[in-house]
Image: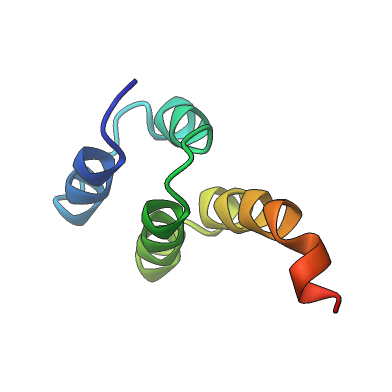
Length: 68
């Protein structure tokens, strides 16, 4: 699996080849802090569908904590 921080760096460098598949692979990580950073990075670069997917995964992980 690709390092999620490498993906974030590539987005910052606008290296967006195979972005969808790389994001889909990244969302399987257990590193929620890195996922949050990835979601923010995607949003900051206007990549809303991919950013939304990352935040959707995080929401489902923490849904019970959000609804309390």
